[in-house]
Length: 107
View 1 (cartoon, rainbow, N blue to C red):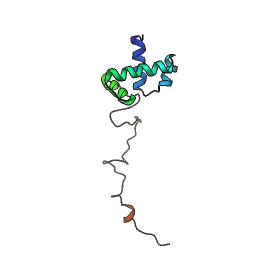
View 2 (tube, one colour):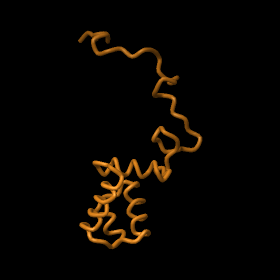
View 3 (cartoon, rainbow, N blue to C red):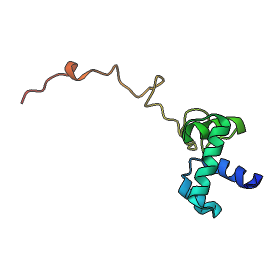
View 4 (cartoon, rainbow, N blue to C red):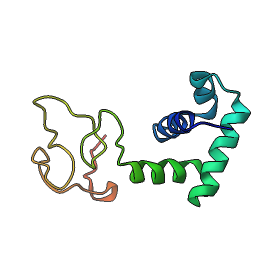
């Protein structure tokens, strides 16, 4: 029988994306025990994969990945903005040409 703190720890580590093997070493449980706990959670929450379970539990618990900001998935860097990619790019000189549109250099 699992207790509430063990279950909470498994959920937190699962949401962080840890493997069953890593979770089992961290919590001093057998790998098979962790697999059973994860399977029970998947059935309880109606998820068909570990990813779906981690995502669902993360949303329900209001958890975010550590070191991330907003929805962009980028880590914050102090004083730096990257404007060389995306629709707001300012460093791009003009429209990009396809391979066929590029000029041919004489040999």
